[in-house]
Length: 250
Image (cartoon, rainbow, N blue to C red):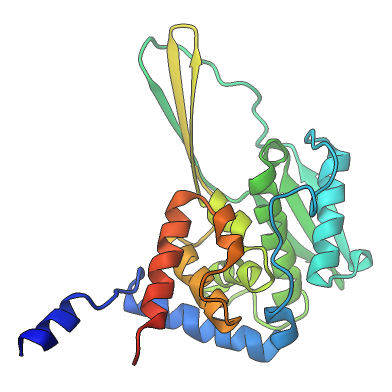
């Protein structure tokens, strides 16, 4: 009896709730059926010069270059997607007007997808160009809409279509960017002022990204994926917990 209790006590726990686990597992299985194992076993894109060569300065030309590379990686014909820039959220430098720490939060859609006839139009907020990781995550998400909604695989009215699109970027080997951009914290000292900013991007939590990446690695037969070293601390921790959970015997 004591031995059974000990085994149960040390049993690895899933980093997400049962309903989230079930949704991730079922959605990943659907991706395999819909896009094939070839895509599942495809290349994982890393935040390195091998994948994004050259100096990145955040210009519109740089954004267009990233857009083109991601279209190629995701197997999307650039002729059927159109890139637009949204300048409405670009508010420039923040005004600081207090002598204490100032905290700002930023949330909301960083991009937008819509159909124009048979073509997908992807609109990217211009302020995302200053954050390369978030930019890649945002473009990948909107191109995911082109694959799911634009190719009529799902309805845009489907309740989970936004988080499903984030999950699709993981299946297409782009999950490192979404996971690292899911939560960001930055602090800057300007004279007497301390300015802190947190931002959330996407529709999945860090634990959901971690478990989804673990499920992705597990389906690929990777018990300790090399690419996990490129993840930030939180999503990497949840990934490891997810893999420990998946490795345990049924």
